[in-house]
Amino acid sequence: MNKYCLALMATTLAVPAVGYERQHGSHEHGAATMQLVIEDDVLQLQIETPAMNILGFEHAPHTAEQRSIVEQATALLNNPENVVSLPAAAQCKMTLASIESSLSEQDDEHEHDKADDHDEDHHDHDEADHDEEHHDHDEEGHDHDEEHHDDHDGEEHAHHDEAGHSDYDLDYQFKCGNIQALQQVDVKLFSHFPLLKELEVQYIVPVEAGFDQGVKHLTAAEPLFKF
Image (cartoon, rainbow, N blue to C red; front, side, top):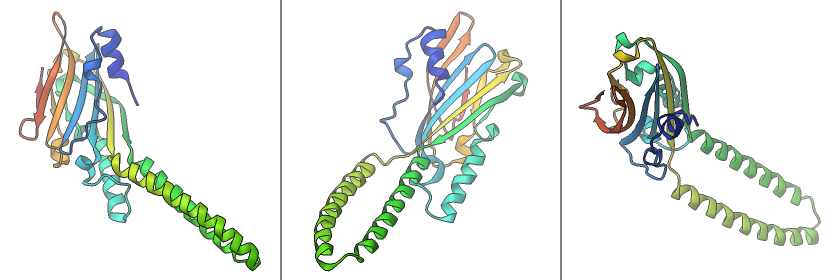
């Protein structure tokens, strides 16, 4: 994941980065966080949001409809105009858009589980070719393996349910021809993803005396961040 913002906070801007670390343990539907940093002529945004806010679900897509929802969301998020609106006078152009989601990891796990099931079916078919005495012996060992496999699956399933949240990590970078004209950011995510209700903006922006930093809370009713 892009650590540009945190690097700026910890080194270039010489301010503590601890308070700005994303709280990956906190997962609240309807809420998201944004890190906003301006340095020189570059605007960097990092957004973390539960997948529920974007998709309406947090598991790997199982149906054609769900896959279509994921594709549409990805297309929306890859267009910066659907994320934020910047003043035209600032002449900002997007130079980076990175969309990451843990849904793909869940999908990989699902495919792995299906492969395991196929191997087990093949193993059962091969066992039928053994003689009865050898088959009984194998069945006893197989039952033991099956019991161990079931216990393992139960542990994995419990772990997945306990930590089964999925997030989107969004990174955007803009290079601006007139950074002095960048005095506000209008967040458009609320318009496209109505399940998103609140956005906590952690920011560092330039001022005459150096840099200003703080936290601002935006909502669908008040999506404009001025600085």
